[in-house]
Length: 132
Image 1 (tube, one colour):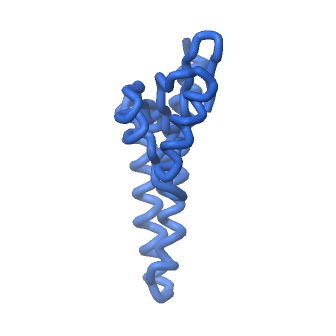
Image 2: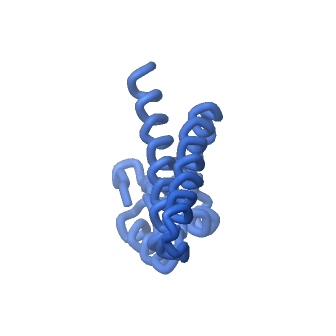
């Protein structure tokens, strides 16, 4: 949580679904109102409480990864196309070499998709910072 007690505003970054009351309580005890809720990306390690916290407090909600990724369609298409080709060829290679393909075998290609998603976000940040 970030905030300014002088202005009475607070922003919560990547809130967890099971801690919503604690964010609201903390802001209240500090004399702040939650005005913004930000998810930096879609989380695989916990359930985001971003949208729920936003609804409970009336705060503005943003998911930065979605905003960065879908602003530039060519950027998304280029990175995800490379990732999909990599996934397809890596699975073909595993099958062609007669490795048993099961859930663990598919984890490598799944990580390629995560890397592609991260590269879209980083490229978006680069474009925003460097080219303006």
